[in-house]
Amino acid sequence: MELAGAVTLLVVVYVSCLLIALAKKKLSQKGRLPPGPIPLPLVGNFLQIKSSEILKSLLRLHEKYGPVFTVYLGARPVVVLCGHQAVKEALIDRAEDFSGRVTNATLEPTFQGYGVVFANGVCWKQMRRFSLTVLRNFGMGKKTIQDRIEEEAQFLLAEFRKTKEKPIDPTYYFSQAVSNIICSIVFGDRFDYEDKDFQNLMHMMNNSFREMSTGWAQFYDTYASFLKYFPGPHTKVYDLLEEMRLFIAKRVKKNQETFDPSLPRDFIDCFLIQMEKEKDNPLSEFNVKNLELTTLNLFFAGTETVSSTLRYGFLFLVKYPDVQAKAHEEIDRVIGHNRVPNIEDRSQMPYMDAVIHEVQRVSDLIPMDLAHMVIRDTEFRGYLIPKGTEIYPILSTVLNDPTMFKTPDAFNPENFLDENGRFKKNDAFVPFSLGKRVCLGEALARMELFLFFTTILQSFRLKPLLAPEDLDTTPQESGFANIPPFYQISMIPR
Image 1: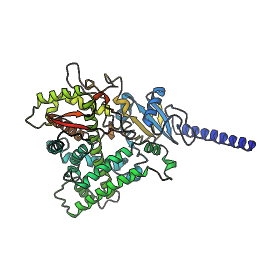
Image 2 (image 1 turned 135 degrees about the horizontal axis):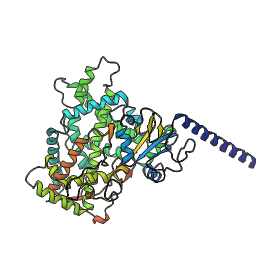
Image 3 (image 1 turned 45 degrees about the vertical axis):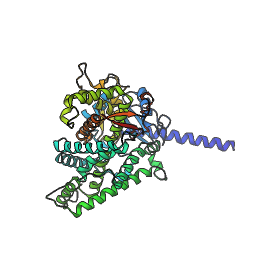
Image 4 (image 1 turned 30 degrees about the horizontal axis):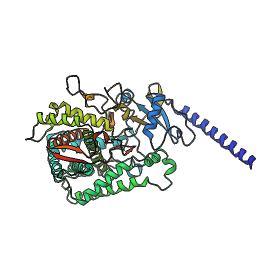
C-alpha cells in the first residue's frame, strides 16, 4: 500500500508539473500578460482568491502587484485594473480596445449575448444607439421626464405620510417609485403601489440583485466551467430573471395587439417599429429576443441602481445627522416649503449635490464594474493582452483613490466641495463606469437622485430607531453589487 501511495503521489506531481508547463507555454504564445500570482492547473489562483470574497481578495493582490495584474479564475486569465489612472487609461484612452463585454456565468443562461448591456460587436452598437435615441425621445435629460419624476415623488410622499411616523423599511417604497419612472418609458405607464403584480415584480428584482452578489454566485462565476454540470443555488438567479422576462414578454404581446406605428407609446412600440422596418434583413439585430432582453436590461438597471442608492443615502443621512441638518438648511434657504423642487435648483445647491455624489461614492454600488473584454490584441503599459481576455476595472479603487479624494475612507461631502463651499467635479467619480460602456441611463439617474432626495428631505426629517453610532452600513452582500443592509426609519413631517 505504501508503494502504491508513493507511485500515485509521483504521478499527481508529474501531471501537475506538466500542466503548469503547458499553461506557461500557451501563455507565452498568446501574449505578455501583466504579472500576478502563479496559478495552479485547473483551479487557477484558488489559494490567493477567496471565491466568496473576490473583491477583498483582489484588493489584497493590488497591494502586492500594483495597479495592473493578472489573476486566474479557474482556468481563465483576468486582467485587473486598479486606481483612477489605470482604469482611465484603459476605458477612456483605449476605449475601443476595451469595449467588449463578458457576461457573468450566473447571467449567461438568461442573456446569451442579447440585450444592450451584454451584447458585443454590431449587436451592441445598434442596441445602444437605438436605446439612447428612444430614451432621449421620451424625455431623458429633458423637462418632460422631470415632470414625471416630480409627479412620482409626490406619490411617494403620500405613501410616506400614510405611515404616520411609524418605523418603516424604505426598500420597496424606493423600488416602486424609481421603477415607475422607467416603467413610464418602457411600458408607457406607471403602476399603483398596491398593485400585487407590481409588488411581486419588485420582490423578484430585489431578490435577484441580492442573489447575484452572494458568496455562492461569486463561487459559481469563478468555477462555472465545472459547476455548470451540477445543480445548485446558481439557478435561483435564472429563475427570477426568467419570471421578469416572461412579464416583459406579456407586455410585448399586449403592445402588439394594439400597435399603431404612427403613434409609438413607449420603448416597446419603438422597437416593434424598427423590427418592422428591418423584417426583410436576415442579419437584423432587431428581433424579439433583443427586444425582451434589452427591455429587461433597462427595467432592471433603471430600478435597482437608483433605488439601492436611495436606500444607502437615507442610511447615511440618519447615521450622520449633521449632514442631514445641513441638507435641510440648504433646501429651506434655496427652495423653501411652498414649491416643488426642480432640477434647475441643483446649480444653487452645492451641498445637496455634494451629499448625493458622496452617497454614490461611498455606497460603491457596482464595485468591480461589469466585466469588460479586449476586442483585439492590445498593447497596454508594456504588456500584450490577447484578444478576448477578460478585464476587471475595479471601480471601488477609483472611488476610493487616495490621490483623488480628501478623505477616501470616510463619508464626507467635503470630498466634492472646494474651500469656498462650491461644488467641485472629480474625474474619479465613476459610479456609472466610464468609456464606451458607461451606463446609458446616467442622465436619468442623476435627475432622479436629486429630485427624490430634495423632495423627500423638504417634507420629512429622517429619524433612526438606533443611535447613529450603532447604525451599521456594512452591505448585506458584497459581490456583483454592494447590497444595502435592511434598516428602519421614521418619516417625521417637517
